[in-house]
Image (cartoon, rainbow, N blue to C red):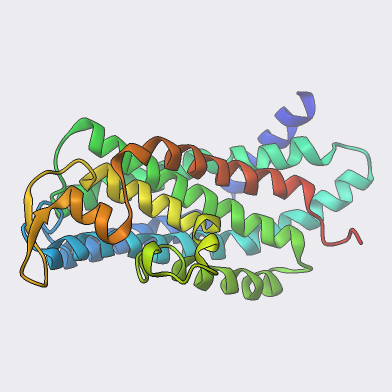
Length: 274
């Protein structure tokens, strides 16, 4: 506990004295929220047509792509510099890896919470999602954990690689795979069965599932499909994407689990180990 407090104090000062890192991600979040909010203006409440619903879902997919990847990329140079100091101080016997990794993860939480609040409130209002407390807090919850697990993933990849440049190359490969198998570009039911297992191994798939069903999974309004038929929004999500509102609890648990897994891996993985 003494080591954790010392490392947390150190990380707090390090982040406070590095305003460029936090300024960049807050500025990027603000610009992205304004861009998405104006592009998808008041589209969140429109569920009468299939295309309107797909546009709203596309905005959720895009935030994972833009802000999540930006968080992972911007944190890597910071962690790379901090890691050099950690190796020296650990070798001197000042503290062990666990309290350092715990402090490194913990210090990100308030910054990520503010980042998610900035994006969530502005976009939720501009896109005119249904103003229900439960739906809003579900939206905010998934925004927080999108930013968290991408940030922790960026940290984890730095632990696996010799420097931030290689970490950027390695992590970029997985961004594309996660997006491809997230269930939006290709619905899970249409993914070939020999690749469908990876759908459940994509963090983005679970988060997108939770975002969509928390907003639209219980909507019983009629919707016109592209082929001219009509069905409820709830039925469309179940028949086309395989999304069920009753699965919301499971998506919540797995999304939190991905964040914990990546956070734990920061302490466990080390590219120097052979």
